[in-house]
Each structure stands twice: as structure tokens, then as C-alpha cells.
Length: 419
Image 1 (cartoon, rainbow, N blue to C red):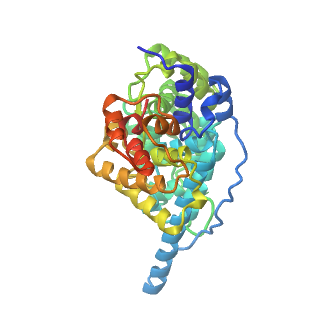
Image 2: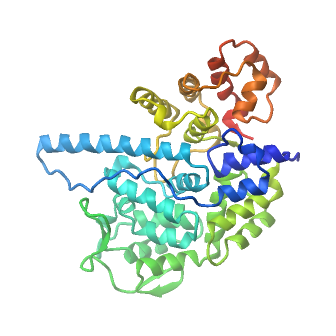
């Protein structure tokens, strides 16, 4: 198992804990780069000012106007977040992106950009701290309630969607709870509702089942918070959450038992996400050349923007629309995960159709770069690739125009896969 050298290890840090390095980022040492990535810096990008909107009713014209407004606001959100990803040099946006996939919630069903933005800000505010606080916020998050039918969860007729996904996908994983636990958890969460024109969810005591419930062996009249505390107290929860971080930031191959044990220790009683990231970076396997991940389309595109020093603000409306179309063609658009299970991973992103869309985006961004690499070595340094294979070098040697050199290199396996 070969190890990456110091410069390549720093590049990997930026790939995995951020959205890829800018020029000059690899000149820092590993420890300095890690400290910089894990030090929160206040954002300077203004947050879009949206307001919650009530359902338009049955009037056809009012519905059309509401749909048009919602679509326009969603585009604003997508552009705003992609811009933050490009401009942010810490792990903040990468963690926000990770939690967006973990607690996957889609505007397609929520149909409220205001509530999707509020959830996104929750990920940003709490995502690097204790997982417990994040989980407690998400179990009563308005967008999550709309997404998983919480408004239909009432005493006497519990809806199990939120309870089931909270146990299976968010906190414990399959095999660590029973169907009885799901039913009882649903009862514990009855009554939490959200109105579309409100900025918070509220507990409607008339719809809440206040009788004692038994979840994971604990019997009490649960609140939303005490329910989360009970679930996270299970030892399987720490291993599950740490494993999810590992699978998205390190490798599709689960960590060895001794590695997992060290990461769970770092997670600790405070369920400290940043401590886990530091522990991950300290593991020898993090520097292994065999520990690869296919970049998700958003990660790839944002990383390319950063490498080429193309500022998000420099993209005109036409270019931004073309980029959005390209991301859609690759199968990934912010605020639109395909299901509560989030996005795919690994080879699922390497389809022929995705490759065609990827090349189109690469050409779009290469044409807007001020860099003019003349050959394989120049573009290797520009994109912070450790080394090209002979096959990629041969392909690059056949390309003449600098923008084409960039586009071909950006679609090469050595850049599409974080090595």
C-alpha cells in the first residue's frame, strides 16, 4: 500500500474536506492545510432574502404565479450555494454539502425555497459541531417535515416516514431497530407540523400522542429531543455516523475495525464531527494511494472552477444556465437529491451520458479561464493532478488549443477520481 507524498496528501485534504485546491494551496504543509480547512471563517456572501409562501389555493393564475416564483427562487438558491462552494476555502461548505446528502431533502416535494434555505443554513451552522444538536434540529426541521410527511403524523393515525428514515438512514442503519421501534417512534413524533407560510415547525398538542412509547427499550412519553437522545445513545449510532463520513470523504471501502474504533473514540460523548475529521486525517490509510473516490458532479465542477480561478460572479446568465444544464446532465443538482437516500456514489457517476455532459461543462469553464496551459505538464500543475497515465498523456499530446487541453484533462480519470 503506497503512501502519498506530502504535496499529494495536502491535495487530497482539499479534495476530501473541501472542493479542491486553488493555486498555491499545495504550498502549505499537511498540518497547516488541515488547520486552515477546519477553522471556520465568517462568510461574506449575503444570504438570499426569501419569505415563506402560503399555498396558493385553487385559483389557476395564482398557482401559475406561485410556481414561477418558486422556480425562480430555487435557481437563486442553487446559484448562491454553488458560488459559496467556489469561494469558500474552509471545510464549511463541504460539510454542508455532506449533510445535504445525508439528511437528503428535495425541493421537488418540499416546494418551498425558503424552508430549503433554512435547512441549508442549519447544516452550515451546526454541521461541524456535535451531531446531537444537528439531529435534534433536523427531526423538527420544517423542510424535513414537509419532505417526509410529518404534517400527516397525528395521534391515532401515525405516519411512519420520518421515524423510519431517521432510524434507518440518519442515525442507526438497517438492522439496529425493529418495526415496533418505528411505530413507537412515529407516535413520539406525532403533532409536529409546519405551515408553509411559517418559518418554524410547532408541536400541536391536539395531534400529539402523549401516552408513553417504547423506543429501543426505553419507555417514556418522549419529546422530540428525548427521542433523539435515546436513539443516539445506542452504540451503533456512533459507528453509523462515522461510517457515513468515511464513505463520502475517504473511501467506499468501510474502515477496518481498529480504525473505526479510533474514529468513534474521537467522536466521543459530544459526537464531535470536527474531531472525527481530524482523526480521519491522522489515519495512515488517509494517505494511502489506494484510497480513491469518484468525485460527485458538483464536487468535480466546483473544484474545476476553483482550479481555473473562474469566479462564480464572472459567469453571465447564459453560462450559469449552461452549467446548471450540465450538472443536470451529469445527474446532480443542489437541493434536488433523487430520494431520501441521497445521491449515488462511485461508478454510478461514470456513465457515458454523464461523460458527455462533463465534457460540455469542462469546455464551458475552460473557455473562461485565464490560464493557457500548452501541454500535459502545464495542465497537470494547473489542476493539481499528481501524475498522468501514459494513456492520458498521449491523449493530451493530440490536443492543440489550451482550452481543449484543459477540457480533456478535466475529464481524464486522474481528475474525475480523487486519488
